[in-house]
Length: 97
Image (cartoon, rainbow, N blue to C red; front, top):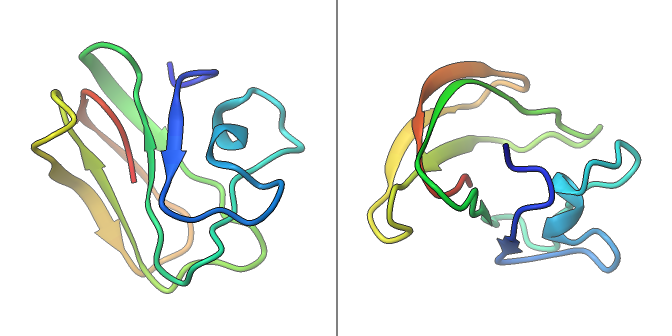
């Protein structure tokens, strides 16, 4: 659903840009430069999401939050936590963080 969709980030390591997380290439990924960063992916339309999978690199964040929006302005939390891997179901519209 998010593959090759527009992606933005508040912080990026050189060469590890936000779009790499959704480019369909398993060898590329996004990595933020800052300790706290956000990545947004616009899936282009409102969609029902039954599962979200996140794969962290060797350096996992201290915490995470996944937000969803149908308009790119108002966001609601879908899941959050301090653990490494998570899977969840829900409804998402515009992006993720």
